[in-house]
Amino acid sequence: MVEVTLSVEGGGVYIVGQTIKCALLVQNNSDVTDRLAWATGQISGHVTVDERHVQIAREQQEEVVTNSSSALTKHVANDCFFSSDPEILFCDLQLPPQSSKELKFSGIVPTHSPPSYRGSYIKYSYIVLVGLQRVNKPVTLINLPIRIINLPGITLVDGPKKPLSHPFAPREECINYEDYFMDKVQSLCCKRPRSFEVKTSEGLVSIVRLTKGAYRLGDPIEVNLEFGDLQCVQVTLKLQALETISPESEVREGTDTRCTTHDTKTIQCIHTRSTAVTLHIPLNVVNSFSTNIVLVRWQVHFDFVIAHLPKTAEIVDAGLTSVSAKGLDCDWRPLETLNVSTLSWELPIRVVPTLPQYIATIAWQRTQTKDTV
Image 1 (cartoon, rainbow, N blue to C red):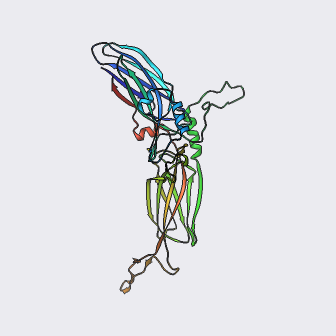
Image 2: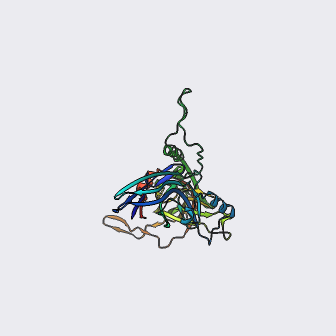
Image 3: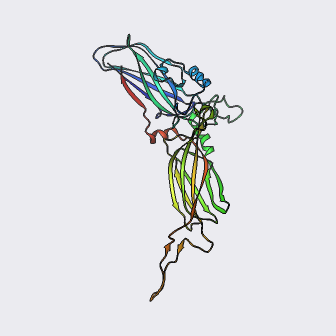
């Protein structure tokens, strides 16, 4: 019996276009010489849809078949939209008793590929796939899930290049891919204060202020609220991710947009002039992205509870007044009934990826798997 261990370097989370380094360790733990016919390794991407709501167009199905370059991926699933060229790891491998052999291979996920995503209507997933076979035996498949992150809008044709320091400098050299990627992310997440006025026909409800134009996975979202003329008694903020299917991929016209709430904060703001609220973006979610099938976007949903009072009325009544030896005493009490209405408002935000190592450390991504042949 041969024990096979498939592992990846780098924590199991990778950027599109980054080289994914994999290793296959084959161990013979028996007391006799063992033999394997062949083994190949590759990386593949798969898409799974809810067929009750989503359909893949014929052009997209033909593209899926064309991009699948190995028959091994068909044994895993018929929904493969990408597979790297299979790499032959060995042929006719003989292992002496109590011996082992390590084989390495690598692959790259194209820069236009979608990130790993598990939604209500669609799922994008990536695996490292290894196929092994003994002589006159069925093929054994070993797969290890990996997570891919992507930043829409960045096009990398030849990879990042190091800028020339002077006219006589040598030819450009490639720099670290992750540094280039994170420079782009950091430029989007720099401080760009924005403000929005929330109004009704009766007047100003609040001024909403954000400190950034985009936020990374794991970042806090600081929302500053400055209330206006109307009396706001309560505000609820919800951080939501929205999943919308494109009209071309809908089974039935008008498929509902699925909304997932990841954080909620409620504050009481009676007689409050201004306040601040912090929402947190989890690390195990996906950033904003879109494909020809689905659009994933983020927003902060606001529910303002507004009190409707006469100009001379107060939310807190003075209550009963009595005279004692110590002076004038007031028993403060709230109104028994309050006429209110709720104003809902959505603020779109952009969520971008963060460092792959940070995601792998917090999300506990698996980096190896074992099997026997």
